[in-house]
Amino acid sequence: MATPMSVSIVSAEEAVWRGEAEMVVARSPEGEFAILNNHIPFLAALVPGRVSIVSGSERAEYFVSGGFLEASRGVGSARPQKEGGEVGSESDEDGHEYHVIVLADDAEDLSQIDAAEARRRLEEAQSEAAEASDERAEARMRIERARAELAASGHGS
Image 1 (cartoon, rainbow, N blue to C red):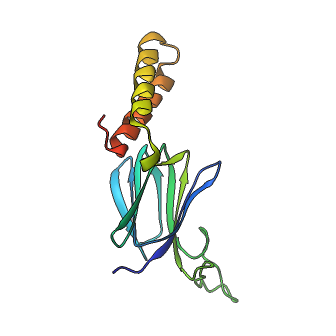
Image 2 (image 1 turned 90 degrees about the vertical axis):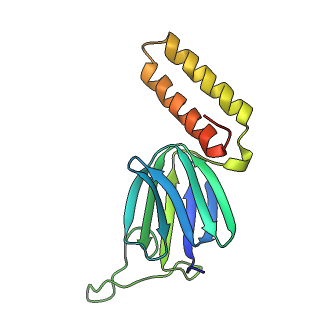
Image 3 (image 1 turned 180 degrees about the vertical axis):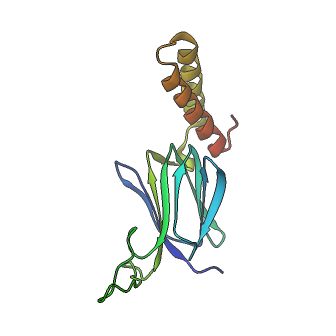
């Protein structure tokens, strides 16, 4: 069993998930990646898709529409300094020295995604993209988000 780390998923509206996990799996423009405890400090932009939080045989999965993932030692993104300028480590309130935070534009528990509603949003965005040339870029973004949401939920594309 791997050593657990502190993990949080937050959106602008709420703290979506907080707890400890052994691994976090997410997707950036460069591809899928996984973070384990004591990974080198890491910052990545996230593309729409699945974020998995793994702890033993349990797995929590969320759809994020985009955002950032930061993995680092210490509380927050800054490593605290000891007296004299020496860099030390600091634990969070649960005793974890390593933390992963997902700063999501929007995050939703995959088990709560309604496949029919996601398909409806995809069809609506595709229809708008075909009709409105002025708003084509925005419609394409909605299409990609809806496709990623369907794929992440396991209901096709």
